[in-house]
Amino acid sequence: MKDYWQQQALLHRDGFVKELHSFLSINSIEDMSTAAEGKPFGEGVAAALEYMLARGESDGFHTRNVDGYAGVIEYGEGEEEIGVLVHVDVVTVGEGWTTPPFEPNVRGGRIYARGAIDDKGPALAAYYALKMVKDSGLALTKKVRLIIGGDEESGWLCMKHFALHDKVPQIGFSPDSSFPMTHAEKGQINPTLALPVQVSSNADACFQLLSFQSGDQGNSVPELARAAVKAPQKTSPEWQREVKSGWEAFLEAQATTGELEITKAGDLTFVLHGKPAHGMVPQNGVNAGTLLAAFLLSLDFEASDYSFLSLLGEVLHEDFYGERLHVACEDEVSGKLTVNAGILRYDRLEGGSVRLNIRYPATVSCEEYVEKLTQRVDELGWTISNLRTSKSHYVPKDRPVIQTLSRVYEEHTGLPAHLLSSGGATYAKIMSEGVAFGPLFPGKESMAHLTDEYADINDLLRAMGIYAHAIAELAK
Image 1 (cartoon, rainbow, N blue to C red):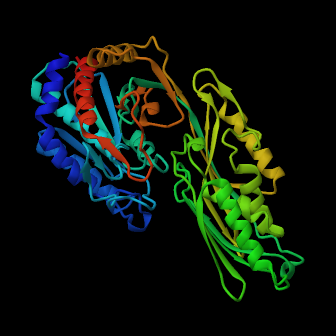
Image 2: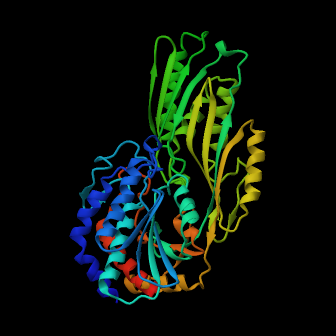
Image 3: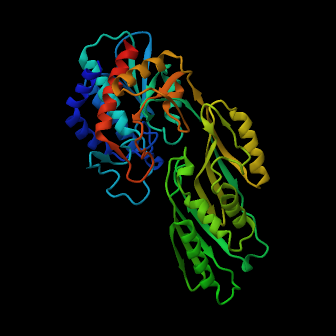
């Protein structure tokens, strides 16, 4: 059957690529400023969801829009259900793209656009796979449900709403990770730390942190940081030269770039460029916010200015595994806990906030580490103003879904289906026997959440064939 499904995928190449251009052109970043009834995550996400549902309806599938939170495209009959779970929302885009992120561009066999690999490209490939199964006329004994979410990158409100209003399949896959398959996913602890304003007793003699901004997505490593600082009223004649010299030496030592503007009135604006990465692997990036804070600590700050910079520059900077937060741990299934400081904000009149994305090992107690984190945050003089958690996920290797998908993958690739674990969170975890299955093939670079995100078109077509075969096997 391998050859049949791959041939079918290749026959759809031109139509798939054309449609992928249209789908990726939709700016589906969550935008609550345009949220409305039936569009809980904004107009862009709603448009992307409707695009998929309209495509399904035109091809004769039964479709349903679940109040704008999620959508369903169904095929087949039967008491048992197979779930294929995808999402149409994307992360923010940042700076430095070679071509505009919502104007898809094909170069060297790759399609470049935000969402190309996470997750609109794979979502459309999964849809085409379901259509291929339908068009084959193959008899199924189970219902297949392609469930489309709109809030995967932010709060998963889409799946929470869906679970309240519909039945969640318990067996299936999500095309939102890597091949062969991910059977263990870390859980997440997502706290927002808050720092109240603390008045300095000697403000005129210290530098003042007027504002600080870095990052706009909790699950991405910030690539840009900006700080506005006011110099002390009483400074030596050489202070500007000393600050500039120290800044330049710091940038050189850190092998990064940045800008510094100083006005005659003593107002300083710092801009630092980091390296973006997915929040599940913060060690792969350079956090612009914590790095800028580390430099600013070389200046003289007091009160809440200092408390904010100290948390960023002395506790969170390069604390990828939570040692300085007192939450470090690991297990054999999924490895070490990781910490990403994703959204960093400070205003001298309003205080500071830091949004963390902590991913804890699959077999670790969430409650235990929330308690440890709360204690540590309190010791540092901060509070937790908001806390969201999501459970970890683990499917034992002897389960039928793993055996079936392993067999399909090995038939298509000739490679052993080694089981993977991940710090990422996919919709697979809402199914008791769900796994993340592709689309990234072994040895291929993941550009999810990064500048110039792309997907290899041939790989998406290859994954399409694998998904069709997998759906047919799971639902037969």
